[in-house]
Structure formats: structure tokens, C-alpha cells
Image 1 (tube, helix red, strand yellow):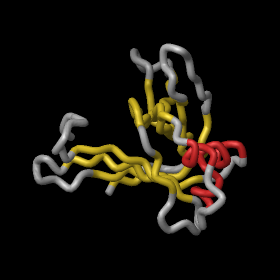
Image 2 (cartoon, one colour):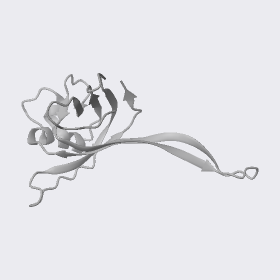
Image 3 (cartoon, helix red, strand yellow):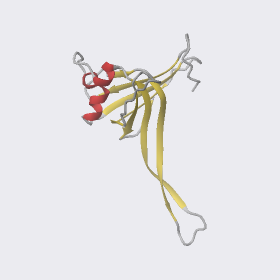
Image 4 (cartoon, helix red, strand yellow):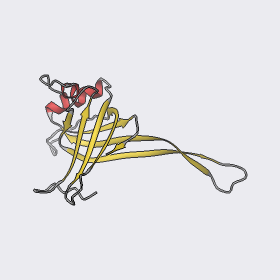
Amino acid sequence: MAYIYPGPGTAAAVTLNLKVTGDTLGLDVPALQNVTLNAANDVFTWTQLDQASKLQIATTATNSLGMNIVLDQGTFFGTTTASEEAKTAGIFGLSTDKTRVEFELYLGDTSAGGAGKTISGTGYITGLAPTVSADSPVWVTPITITVDSDYTVA
């Protein structure tokens, strides 16, 4: 992966799309900030009387996708004119209704002739906490997608 440089003429991009089963286009989430992709395998550890070291084995993973976003009213609260569930509910509605979402995180890097990679999965939106202040006069919120399946890379 290349560096993400948000300058004119660059071909690197990170985009997030959220869908609900039945949606075809989904909801593109604008204004992403500091995206964190977490793939944390748990490890079970035990000791045996015949071993000098502890033994370990990997178990199921706890995966999540976290980021901050600058709020866009239509994306956050949804829009009544949309025909797809993700766009109608918005990020806030998907979270409060506990709707399972399908996500696609595109890590674009076409600067070196590559096609970029897409990491996808399913999960639930949590961790919304919009804030605004005099020093930061735009609404910003953290958002976490707790992943309930394996990641798929394409």
C-alpha cells in the first residue's frame, strides 16, 4: 500500500460503503478520518507440568473497523427521498435500530498501476459520539463497526 496523500492529481483513496441486505448501491460515507482496521486474534494460553514454557493456540478473532467522520446531515440522519434502506436510515438510524450492515472499505492505490484492495464484511455500527466545539466548529464523531464475520479481501 502506498501513502495516502490527499493532494490534487493523486490516485490514492480510502472509501467506505455501507449496505443493508437488498440494497444495490448502498451509502457512501464521506469525510473519513484516521481509519483503523482491527483484526485481533484471541489466544488461549495454558501451562503443563511437562513443559518449561506456556503453550498457546489462536482462537476466534475480534474484528472491528473504526474511524472518525465529519458529519454530513444526510449521511448521518438519512434521507426520506432515498430508495435504499441504508440511505434512508443513515448512520444514526442503522446504529440505533441495530441493523446488520455489509461494509466495503476500499483502499485505493492506483498510483503504481495497482487496482487497490477492498476489505469487506458484516457487522453493527456502534460508538457514535458526535462532538462540536468553538475550536472545532464542525461536528465530528467516532464510528465503529463491530465485525461479526471474517474479513474478505478482494
